[in-house]
Length: 163
Image (cartoon, rainbow, N blue to C red; front, side, top):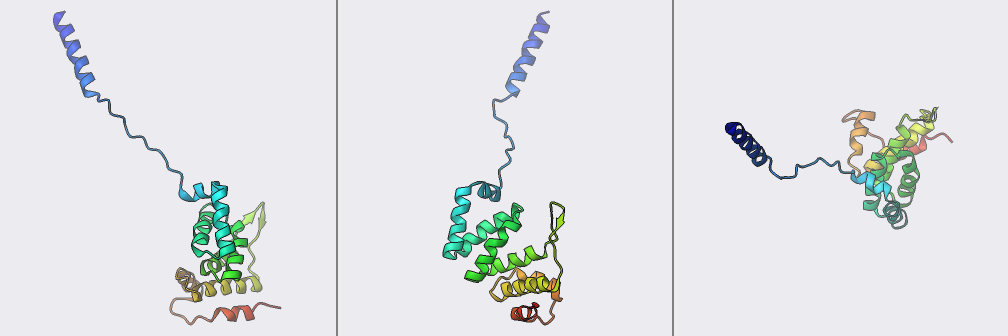
């Protein structure tokens, strides 16, 4: 009996010694920056004001990317249009191209339009973004026109929009 008690004490002691009082690391999922930004209406408004009122391309890039990552592309359209027209923002022109080429359905209504005027406007926006220095547009240009093929100036597509 004494051996059983001794064995039990030994086992309990080993168990207690082997269990350290260290906290185990828990995985805590961090909220992505774009979600935090979109959720913070004050910060969102501050960035849009800097972009729209001051022509701040960096502010536009930060907030527009959050909108894209948060699937708010269609809200972005109006901001992008202002940034493109008012400030000639290359990234805004590219966003307009992306929005106009997205085959979206909202509430059962397809908003994609492949009519000639819409296609020409979208191509104008794509080429204008590249002409203004937005290098990421090159991938789309290669997709649309073919790699190493002659590319018309963006103004060509403005002329092609039916009147």
